[in-house]
Length: 260
Image 1 (cartoon, one colour):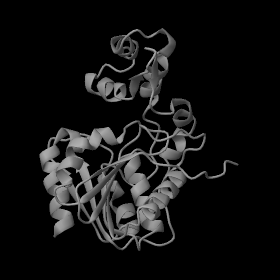
Image 2: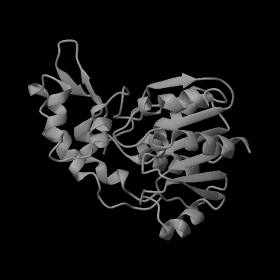
Image 3: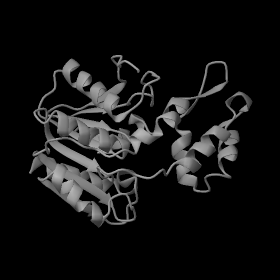
Image 4: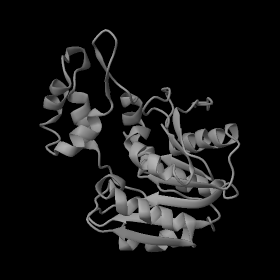
């Protein structure tokens, strides 16, 4: 059994006003949200967070939705936040959903981006193969890493997204920012169903990418059972990374939801 150790989450703060927390997706980081966080900072006090084992937050042998919910609760308490809005994408969306279910008194607005509360079948095996194909001790450049990933991930955009996790040390060597072995070992927990005895009755918005299959019509019943006060909006032309594919549409959708 792994005991919960309080996690000092790395974050960036933007703007002022009512609190808005942004939770990135699996293998992402707060840097993926910098541009949108800056825009939201014109209206809100934004906290973009690196979740455990991602970005610049410390590594831990423990990784699960439950641990990340506990991390977020500690963060909220430390910063004395209340009546918060949360944007969660993919894995971050599952954390946001579970947090809202467990701590409804804290959450005023819940925005879930392209993920449902259901169990998902494995979908990142090619990604893991690509990442493990990169031999860090043999790299001389980022191009070497991309070349190693290419046979497993032909999509250029996906490779570039993952390569944002690669950083060069002072001595010229390379390392992954994320805790790759632990994320691989605990991958199944990221895919599990979100559940709770009581629904979250607060204001909830699900945002789906038109080209994404992460949220299906068959998920409606489960979503409405857990989040009865929820609305689903589909953003045309967007895939799973809705906020990156259609940032202007995403920004306006979220802003209109929170302020109305």
